[in-house]
Image (tube, rainbow, N blue to C red):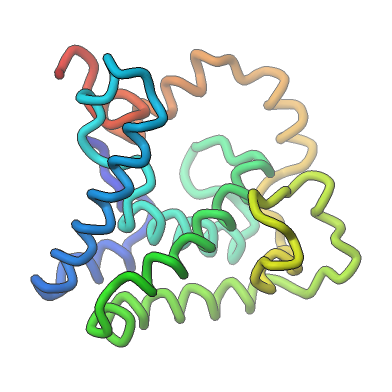
Length: 198
């Protein structure tokens, strides 16, 4: 299995000290998410999916990686980060609100809540209001825009993607390249189980 916390050392550090009741509550959220993800694939693939792609840990790590990218204006490591990934990361962050509401007070008021507040604060510091919605043509939320948090009405001070490279690379990144990048992150296949294992 791939390292969920690649490029997210703060999330890794928090996960290492979470108390058992919080970890059990997180596992419950992840179990429900796994069933949602399994329901979206063909029956013969369901049992091969052993952990949710969008686990709670992955959502925290993704948010931390985005905040890091925004602080530097460059993607972390050698991974391809198109502007569409920015919208996905914002959607993932939105889901953390629902996750945190489903977790016990010990999670919301403890290390997870503290981490999320710190990452949100760094996001705000690395972005500015965008009342014109300049990113809207390319960054589209999956929910109604009037119901979205303010982060959707902000834009990065330093974009975590290179517009010229994104357009150029998107035309040259093959499906095979994207498949290999997804396998590298997951440690096997994009849906979690290493190839050849059931």
